[in-house]
Structure formats: C-alpha cells, structure tokens
Length: 310
Ligand code: A2R
Image (cartoon, rainbow, N blue to C red; front, side):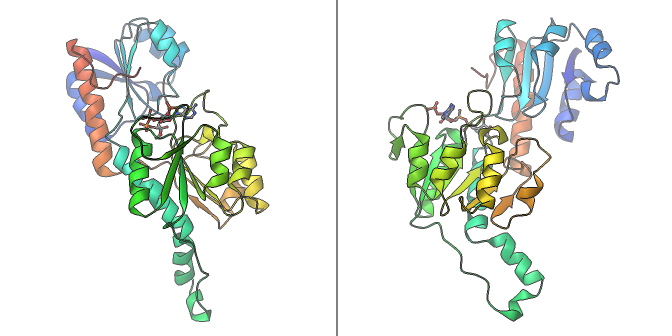
C-alpha cells in the first residue's frame, strides 16, 4: 500500500475511503513533526486543505512527494512555486463548490440588507410588542460589483441578476462574452456600487486588494461582502470605517486570522459574521471529498489528474 500524508483532519467518509487505498499517516497528530517527516520522507502522496496547505519547508523534507491533493478551491496556503520547482503536482476542488459559495454570498447580502439576524433577535427578545422593526434595504435595483468574476463570481452574478440587481465587475482584465460592465479600477467600481462582493483567491498578489481607499469609495451607503479570503481586506481599516459610519456594512465569511474575529466586528449590528462556511454544505463537501479521492487515485495510477492547479 502507498503511504499518504494527511496534513489535518479530513471528513470521515474521505478518511475512510483513503484508508482503504493508502497507509494514512496523520501529520497533525504527530508529537514530533521533524521525526514524522523523516519517517515519511519517501511518501509520494499528500492530502491537505485550503487552510493548512503545505509549505516549501515541508516539501523539502519530503523529497519523494509527487502529488498534493487539496480539499478546497483556494490554494494560497500551498507554496505553488515551490511545488512547481520540485515537480510536485497540486490539485484542488474547483467548480463543485460554486453553487454553495454563491448561495452563501447572496444569503449574506440578504441577511445584511434586510437585517435578518437583527430582526430574528428583535422577535426573540420580545421587542416587537414595543413597536415595529426599523426599515431595511432591498437588493432589487441596487448595483453589485463582483471583485473576481471567475467560476464562483459568475454564479454570484447570475443569482444577483435573478434578484434584479445591476451587475458590474473588476478583475485584472476584461472578459469576452460577459454582459456586465468592466472596471479596470477597483476604487472606481466601488464608488459606483452599493454592494462589493469579493470572490478572488487569497495569496500575496491579492493581499489588501480591498484597501482603505476602496472601502471609503464604497461609502456609508455601501457594503462589502467577502467569500474569498480574509487577506483580501484591510481589516483594520474596515473596522475603523464601519465604526465611523463611513462604510455602511459588512458581511464576512472569511477573516484575517481565523478563527479569531476582531471584537470590534462582533460588536457591530451592521456586520453579519459567518464562520468560513461558504462551501460547507453536506452535498458540496461530499463532492469535494470525492474529487480529492479521485485525484489521488488518478495520481496513484499514473493517470491524468482531474483538476490540476496551474
Ligand atoms: O484577474 P482575472 O481576470 O484573472 O480574474 C480572476 C480574479 N482575480 C483577480 N482580480 C483582481 N486582482 C487580482 N490580483 C486577481 N487575481 C485573480 O479572481 C478571476 O475572475 C477570479 C478567480 O476566479 P477563479 O480562478 O475561477 O476562482 P474561483 O473558483 O471562482 O474561486 C475564487 C476564490 C477561491 O480561491 C477561494 O479563495 C474562494 O474564492 O472560495
């Protein structure tokens, strides 16, 4: 049986299926990491996820490594240049999570715009008897700017259209055959929209992309929604502008230092918080697990990988 290094806990069904084909070695449980890596230096296969990833240092300790299969679409925690330089293939789980992530993005927008979380608390706390809930805002007629009109971004766009929103987008370049207005300047787009939805990958290239200027341009009537990575947003500026009333609201599924969320964000009513659960539905997580399994089986058999990165 081939060895497989599991970097962190995986879903039970995936762990069981992998256990039938591989001798699974659990990195996160090893008390002595260096000794673990030395013992498994010739291991060819690894399974990890978007949070744990794999560093160049770990790759260096595993000269036999051939394939890193990641459970998730974001690969920013995997040192891709290091993998490429060492001839290590990487796979992720694109597309199968588009619907779930897009649904959560729209759910967050509805929750923030219609103040659903606050309204629930209002009813539970018995406040209704004392008077009606405050008026809220609707999505219809508003403009949403998608930051990253990729696989997920396009699904968010089509759902926003179904809610009768006007859709525009920003990326590094305009896309052909896309019916939405393109902005080559993110700050300019932020000035023109009520909603800014971030669905770009994390990593050094996108760190701080949503900076103070972008958030200021979004303004008191604007809201930011993030289903990409916490690193995309200047979180300190976000907190400051929300507190000062210079930004209307935020609905966030991802944070700079998960699972830690700044107390200031937790204290504000114009903020909706979600524990990085955009892809976390039963159906999608099963599909992601199956794709991870299929990639590893293909790698083991020397067949083409289903979803190679890069
Ligand atoms: O820049 P483009 O035209 O290649 O568009 C991509 C955009 N993007 C960026 N936009 C602005 N500045 C950047 N530096 C930048 N880098 C990438 O993000 C593309 O439209 C989008 C990413 O789309 P996909 O590669 O299809 O990724 P997918 O599957 O939609 O997932 C996006 C991310 C994941 O990496 C996770 O972090 C999260 O959503 O769940």
